[in-house]
Image (tube, rainbow, N blue to C red; front, side, top):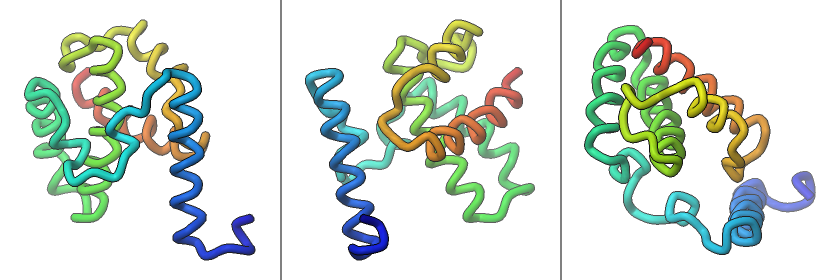
Length: 128
């Protein structure tokens, strides 16, 4: 289908497919999958914001503005998944939580999940 329809429409339909998959699996669609005005960063609990901000402050001088913003976006997405499984700050990250995070269905493509986890690995290494 990608070659036959406009790219924008394909992206929206792809998003709808993930919403349907999430609805079928969980009975609901989390607000992070809906097109809302609040960013995932704004949805983070304050404990996660504080931990993420310390990481972002550390890497601001090494990253381009766009890479820094992508880091904030991707890490916020993963931190929301961690908060969904009860991990509320960097001190609460355990090996079990990491394995659960890797195995969790993030309702995105395999490639997108790999990108999310790659950015998150850098953040976890910083906290380590």
